[in-house]
Structures are given as structure tokens and as C-alpha cells.
Length: 160
Image (cartoon, rainbow, N blue to C red; front, side, top):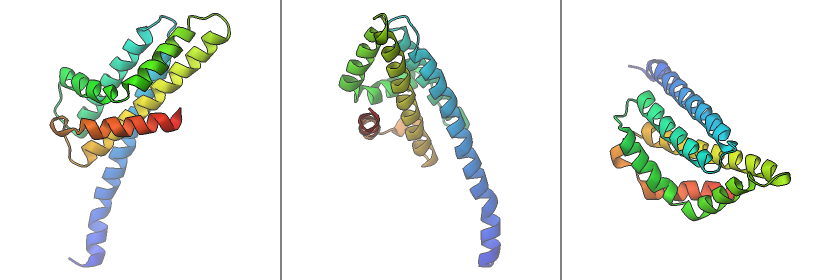
């Protein structure tokens, strides 16, 4: 096979990888939007439950997309370990924005916008981390939760 033939032969594979990644990004964008929607729920702490459920559903969808075996309880455990790394920041921000939603006037607006934004950023970042992990051939069995925690924490600090 010549170099030219090899280049032509690998083009469909590159296109498929690019298409697969774009589809994965679309999955993440869909769930990030749902996460933002849950972030504006006016019921205190229902927003956090909705966001968590959305993130679990997103990782399950990414597993299906990449053909990675999964169980929802396993995904919940992994996400709990990852999000636990940003717990002090997330809990403070989440509780503050959830509380602000119960304050009439300006607090309501700030709470809605804050929680919607935080949940969107966190969901997109988690999605990006799982896309990278699955594209590198990873599975749920070999997720480096410490590295993902650190990446999520850094990204959340940059965006806040």
C-alpha cells in the first residue's frame, strides 16, 4: 500500500471518529440544557436532585454511544466520587443559589441564573471528561476519579 493509498484508506476512519465525537458533544449539549432547566426549578433542593439525575443519564447515554458497558448504580457511584472533589465549592455555591431562589426580588433572579449556569458548566465539563476517557479506550472500570475530580474542580473555578 502506498502512502497515498494509506491516507485515502484512513479518511473514512477519521471522518467516523469526528462524527462520533460531534454526536457525543450533541449528547452532552442536550443534557447540559436539561441540567440548566433543572437549575431554575423554584423548589429548593429539587434542582440539585434533577441536575444529578441528568448527569447520570448523560453518562449512561455516552456509555451507550461509545459501546461501554454500564450500570446506573455504577455511574452514580463514579459521579459521586468525581463531584465529591468539588463538594466544598459546589455545596457552597449550590446551597447559596438554591437559597437565593427563595428570596423575593433580586435573590430569585440571581439564584435562577446562578444555579442554571453552574449546572450547565458542571454537566458540560463532566461530559467532556467522559468523552475523552471513552475515546482513549477507557471504560467505567478504569475511570480515574481523582484526575476527573481535579479537572472538574479546576474548570469550575475558572468559570465562576
